[in-house]
Image 1 (cartoon, rainbow, N blue to C red):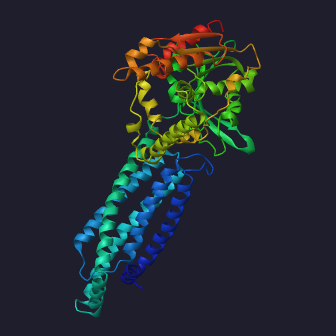
Image 2: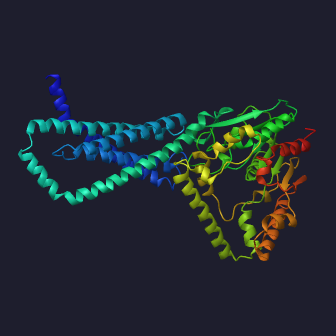
Image 3: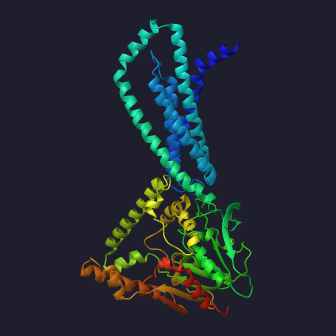
Length: 518
């Protein structure tokens, strides 16, 4: 068999190979859409990832595989339509370029191996679609030269076309519309992938430690301990909730180092450069103690809890008082205070309170679905999280980037699912070691501040509610624990973000003063 015969054979029967490839990918991608879709609402199956991304990528593969099947089976035209060929060739060339870019950015991003696999299949399928379109044109031209223009095939082809003309035109219109839509979706997915690929601009700053877990598993956690070593002076451990990773605490660590103090910051599992959370990890208890004892620092430690980190460090002090020298709360409030204050200030009945709580939580969950389903995969997070100021300015862009990434938001989504209307009040349990001192650094604004900053263009009743709410928060915070000392920040600029983002030097200064003899 000579070369021309082999070419002829390939042109004649290659469609079978393309058809098999298309059908297999249709089945695979459809199964992928179903599995990923199920786990957008469930935990897992193994780790907590953004499953919406998998839905999008499998949907793209599904559509392009349908194009593979369609062009493999598409009847040949009696007269080759060069315009149609050019349009299809241009379209598939463009989406192939999009697929290549998508594959590259996810390969650079590294964290989602499944995304790398899906984008490779999308790229391969679109390359094959270009080949199919070219082969179709070449084959039709060769057959027309052989058959002539008056053969029985032309009459049969024409009669078939007449019979299916209207449905075929409807299909072409719908398919063309979907092609345009998928082109836009691919561009948006590239935008989301580029955001992830920006990790090459912000490589890990710290070290990694493999933390042993139950069941023989382990988890890699990214951490950074910095500042002068002195075994006679306790190390600061800076802690927040599962919304905030290591980058948020660069400022306060730098400020503490300027004062000659050593501190440790880290990415919790599910954040930053640490591993994803496992599906059966609902809080920090499964890894926290093993992590603290694995980083090579000498305890006991001064734990600093910012916001939601207050409960984490207090729970740890209850379980492992031998590891805790002291606790300091940075603007920490009792759990669910935003709901409880509403209940108490508005005298809500229990059914009214439950309805209010459920409504608020449903709203938050819906927002996180939009963020994880569209904002993160499409790279639209700057719409939801505008760039904020922070100190030092040189690290601002890096801090902001972490708030645009997948882990930050999918972890928040799953942590929100663990919230309950009546959480356990850990602060009601006394610490087992009375030698552990507990300090509070908090915001305190008076009524005049509230009137000036929150009462513009609102009714007197609403203003009165804001004042009572402000005082409620102050009292609830003060009565949360028996503090050894309380330091109030009353400047207009003071708020939760002030201590970590806007002026971490203030927090470092107070911390150093609290422990200047230690």
